[in-house]
Image (cartoon, rainbow, N blue to C red; front, side, top):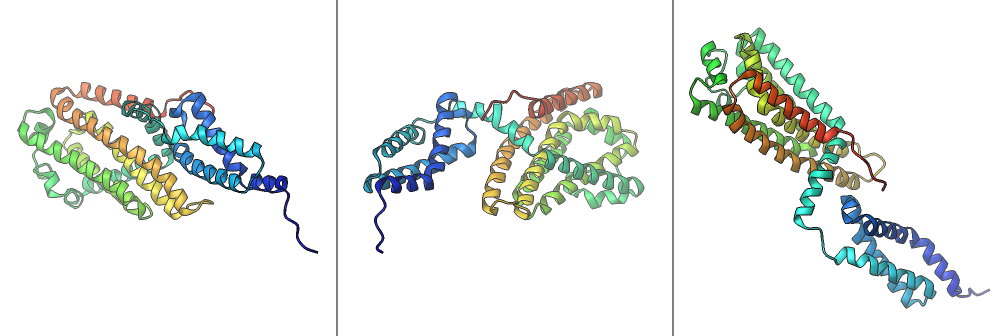
Length: 335
């Protein structure tokens, strides 16, 4: 018995079954964009539209060449025309994109990293406790954690009065500013490296965060041993709340990439890394903003505000602002 060609209706049905899921997905994304504006789409959905659009055009070309039913061809032509305007039409303005980043993308990426952020904060605290305890028991441990270029003359051998002068501004103002700038530069470098080295299974990121906490703990131990713990807390917190939070978020971004590299789950490793990379990258753009804010607080707030209680008040206010901005409940919209 010889095979008979498939009827046009059967060919059209099989063709539709093989590709209809992609067409429906593209139609759903276009409907969402038309009804709620392109800003309502996530970054992943925006990147998905061009891929589905090209696939639909290919299907339309095949449908025309093989003379499939006209209803299917009309549907594909209409869908392709609608998607065309989102692929090649005008994009959102730069101001609108920036507003979307601050209003939605950055807070969402930080909330997505909440587990890794807790781990980073715990690592930083652990490093501070270990180093602080060792320096408290044996002051010479200070030099094992704090490089000479960062410590300067602020260490176990410094007098109580010279340490106090670095906090209340009665000492060398130029030297104080240089020390604060070095501390800021150190934290910024740790933040960027913790993110950049996340691909190595997150281990370098974890070690950097742990070390950054150790540096902080060593300094705290020296000042506390001289009865200056409260004053040091105010001096650090006025800009440190923002600065250390930024370091923790950078570490969290690195840990997310490292964890995904090691454990991609059911997804293909490349796809899992692409998704994690987008989340981590958005968070890191925000980390740069936070470091800039911390620099302003360090450069102006710390030097203009000498009262310890007021320093704590400013630090508490910045902490509430950041926590509210990132983690306060938001009204959600249906997808």
